[in-house]
Length: 180
Ligand SMILES: CC(C)(COP(=O)(O)OP(=O)(O)OC[C@H]1O[C@@H](n2cnc3c(N)ncnc32)[C@H](O)[C@@H]1OP(=O)(O)O)[C@@H](O)C(=O)NCCC(=O)NCCS
Image (tube, rainbow, N blue to C red; front, side, top):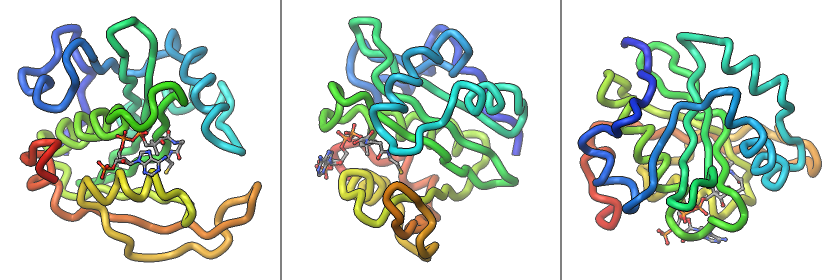
């Protein structure tokens, strides 16, 4: 499949189907990193460093990042992903603490899944801590299913990773958010 596109200033016509009014998605770039790092540090016990994000930004053609900006102008959420053949590998997804539980994570992921599916991605995958119920619920809503376990994959604290796949991306992106 071809590369994921930069999201244009004018959002795709379908953006209103997946984003709340006034919210927008932007392609991750260096000027977002202060806000992204703030969310990252508030979200994970082993947060990515600025250098790790910069490396992702330089990995052109493989690595993609998107941020979700709320109407007040703050970055509310971000995700990074790799495209490998016809697969979308979601590497990092986080919503700022003040914006959690309000649909921001679901909106951003629906946007990115649709972007990827539109370019030919057939499947999507990610890993998640076994105890991360909010994330598991979110991914379940989006058609992800657990297919494997990596024992003791995470540290601080040590915990298994569940390996999730969504094999029906084309169907998921056609579903309206409230019908999943
Ligand atoms: C996991 C995370 C991305 C979810 O994003 P969010 O914007 O809060 O989630 P949404 O509001 O879109 O909700 C999606 C689903 O998760 C559920 N959910 C959200 N917060 C929840 C919580 N604290 N407990 C249980 N379920 C929760 C919602 O109820 C919703 O399910 P429903 O539609 O069936 O009711 C966010 O909580 C987060 O950033 N957590 C820290 C970082 C992280 O764990 N990232 C994922 C790593 S794999």
